[in-house]
Image (cartoon, rainbow, N blue to C red; front, top):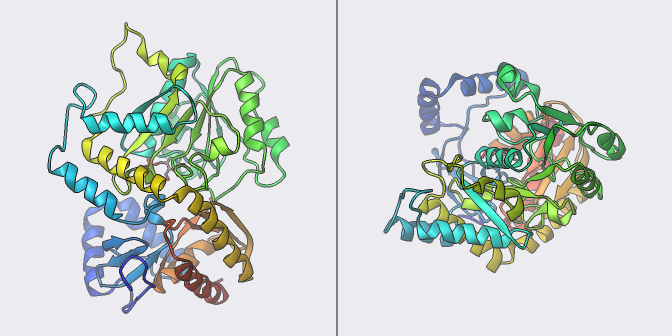
Length: 437
Ligand SMILES: Cc1ncc(COP(=O)(O)O)c(C=O)c1O
């Protein structure tokens, strides 16, 4: 079986000799926050949490420094939606690298950057759109928040408890996920943010009631159509639509953070559009570059127009924004998603994966949530996901813990993952849950 579609093959303890040597070098040079996190996890779960070190990835498979092969149910934080190192993307990157690596981005751009801007505007739900390119999800959210201020002149933002929008200052201020991420910086964060409840099941009314009464200072609402990092928290039907209507009446700019959910991951190009939020701005990243860092903030033309004041400089740019390699990779990724019908496939496969999980009657799992190929297994035990993900790693499956209390297993596999690979995973998961929780 070729690398990409293969089952796991873990033949050594992890990490073994080669991997361990890398881990020691890592611990001597990386920011201590990460080393400390591994130690803390080891103390809390009684298991080793040293990482595996990746040396190769293809399709749904990852190979570590010790030669072990894994099945990746994380897509590397949701990036490898079309699979790792998709040949069409690799080819496009190589071709681009042969002619142009860098330009004077916002001053004298590359042709490939212009093509990507056009493509993103055409993919947007609006007849007239404009886009700004950047590198990370946090960059795209920053651009969206600034766009809302430019359009409304109002500093206030409504955001959700549990929402995750990135960790640079602008996005961190609107991220309601886990107070510990904010605590050391809180005095430096934008103080105009109002957090409201996120509805899990029948909590819609309370969530809507927690919206502010006075909107005179509020210019934007930012929302993930499905909360990913908070544990694949899918809002009830009609919630996003109702939310959108209420905010629109107040003149707020609606920002859909589709960095995780967009481009087919949740079974639609834009989950927010499918759920009738009717956003004004869409942030996209992660899967867009097929593995390279590319992101974008796309907006209705009339919302983005405020940037175009003739008296004003180009006041939001970045040295590498819209770089040719990233743009070429993104165009190739969008081609693959479009030509291979991966949006529909994501809906289909996600439903089939959810069915396999439901039929397995998994011990210690109280709920299975899914939207396309974004799946979350709610565990009964807090921190349970830390123990389970480690046990799965040792058996060759890469899965991430999610939820503020690490009580959700987050599955976001490449859309090309085979059903047989998933069935193998469900088998192993059943046994791991019985022995680990
Ligand atoms: C919904 C959402 N928004 C924003 C971000 C931040 O993206 P990045 O880590 O690329 O800055 C993430 C990352 O996980 C995300 O899931």
